[in-house]
Length: 490
Image (cartoon, rainbow, N blue to C red; front, side, top):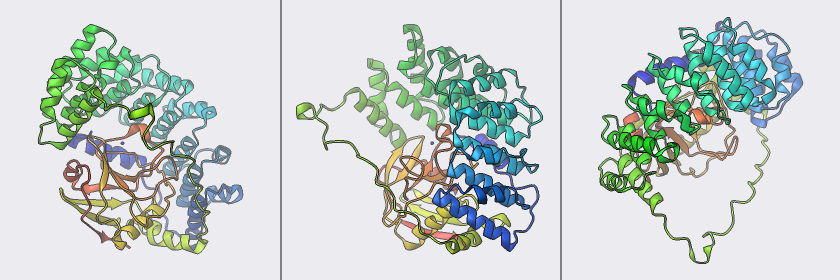
C-alpha cells in the first residue's frame, strides 16, 4: 500500500467525502436492524439472493439501501449491475456513491460507458463522480483509459471537481495499456500538491519512458510527496537514452541527501538499479546508516546486484509451487449471530458513538488504532477477539517494506476473514490484513506506511492508526507486538 502533514489533512478530507454519512440520520427501527443483519449474512456467505437484495435496495431507510448496494459490491456477482441500475441513482448522495462503488467492485468492462456518463457529467455529485473515476481504475482496460483521458483533458480544477480529478489520475495510472500522457502531464503542473503527487504517481506507474522528461523535473518539486514518486520513477530501466539515464542517476544520487526520509529511502531503492561505481559506493555508504529504512533498502539493493548462486543441480530449493488453495469450510453462522454483530458494531457506529480503539505496544513505542465497526463489522469482531484473547502478543512483523507496509505473521487461532471492502481508501495509516486475494486472509494485520492506489478495491480498510505513526514508520523486521489491549469497545 508517502504523505506529509498537509497530505494527511487533504486525504482525511477526501476520505471523509468518500464515506460521508447519509444525508438523513433517521433512527434504525427493529426491522431496519433485521434487514442489515440479513445483508451482512448475505455478504459473509457471498450469497446473491436476488429477491432479498432487490427488496432491500427499495427500503424506505437510506442506510438499508446503502448497505444493500454495498453488499452487492462485496458479493461481486455481475448480475448486481441490473439490480443497481433498475432505478435511477438514489437521491441520497451517500447511497448513490455507494451504488457506483458497488458497480466498480464488479469490475465489469461492459460498464465503462455507464461510468463515463457519470464522470463527464458536470451535474454529477462530487462523491459520485469520484467513485466513477475510481471504478474505471479497477477495470483498467483501453476503453476505461480513454474515458479518463477525455475527462482529464477537459475538466477544470475546482472544489466540485478536484476529488474526481485526483481519483482519475490514480485510475489512469492503474490502467494496463499505455497511451497519451499529455492529460497527466497537464495536472503535474497543478498548484495543488495533492493533485501533483497523484499525477506523478500516474506517470510513474506504467514505467513509460515517455514520462521521463517530466519526472526529471518533478524530482525537484517543492512537495516531498511529489519527489517520493518522481524519485522512485527514476530507476535505470525506465530511462530510454544514455543522456537521460545519466541525468536520472545524478538526480537520484542527490536525492540520497533529501530532507525527507521517504525520498531518501526511494533514492536508495532507485540507485540500486544502476551498477556503476558511483551507485555501488552510494549503496555501500547507505547500508551503514543508523536508519533501518535506509540500511535495509541498501542491503536489498546490493543483493539484487549480486544474487546468490543457484542451488546445485539448477533446481529450486523446496521443490514445487504452493499447490491448490484449500477450499474453506462453508459458513454456518446463524442469522442471530449476525444480528448480534450488527447491534454491537453497526448500530452504535451509525448513531455516532465513539469508535472502538486498540493499543499495541512494540519495541519502538505504542500504536493506537481506531476501527471502522460500521464498515467492517465482521473484521472488527475478529480483531477484538484476537486482541482480547492475547494471541496477538509476541507475533512478529515478518514482512517490513520501507515506505510501504509493516505486515504481521499469521496470528495463532485467527479465523478466516471475509473481505469487507468499502469506500475508505487505502491511505497511509490504514490497517488491513494480508491475503493472496479477496477472502483468502486470516489475521495478521498490516499497517500502511504509504498510500496504496494500486490495491484499491482488493483489501479491507479495517481501521486506521490515529497515534504512533512515527512508531509504525520505525518498525523493523521481526519486531514483536509485546502487549495489546482494547482502549474502548462496545
